[in-house]
Length: 320
Image (tube, rainbow, N blue to C red):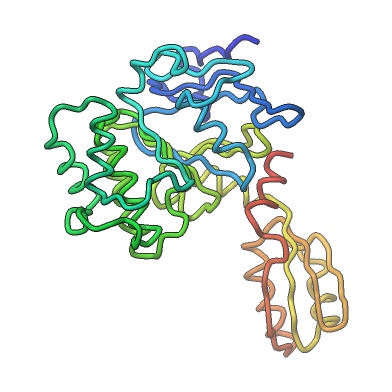
């Protein structure tokens, strides 16, 4: 299958693509037996931080491994700086991946891990090890065994090892998993800084707020397909139109239902005892209308929460 044609001069830019790509996926499909992991997926990445967003099992890790040449694609093409990472091993001088899974031998210190990577890739200037450790703010703990590190500290050590090659392209698979709030802040600041240096930083997550904190551009994948692409506002706007169900518990569910049923933000209501379930595609408008209606009726609200507001449900609606 042919790759999508680049937008012509003056045409509106497809948000799935960038003008000066460093990494490209062209109609990529990957399957494992009967399971299709990626299906005709096309997008590109350039300088800065791009968030790769999707629920668990969406195909994010498969795409990242394909982009790094770690697994072959069944159809389509992957290019890094214009070359195939499976065929041209020189690409890997400028490419590094930080996997989600734990792949660090026991007993190593961050410095030893970085020195091992330097040996593996024949990096002669060992000053780069100190630079990588300083960059991730790990110098004070550089000579301590990683066996006692928290998940966030181990992630930073793995990022330091990836930086030893001083890569142009850095791929990070769920790097914030298991990190505490302080570690998350350190890692997000680090990724943002690396992107500002002109590197291509691709960061996957299933948490929208995490992606928004570090990436200006977002690629959304669901069930191996491209579901959405663009900036924060475009993704949020798409999600705001997704049908939601909101559980409302109060002292007067039936009266509240009767007052809300004609409101333009309400698609439907269902009463079950003291529980009222409101369907809406305009959650923001409902958030204003609901307390007003309760106040006018003298009804006390005891609980208001979304019933199906997970990223999984939102992504299902986006891709549909």
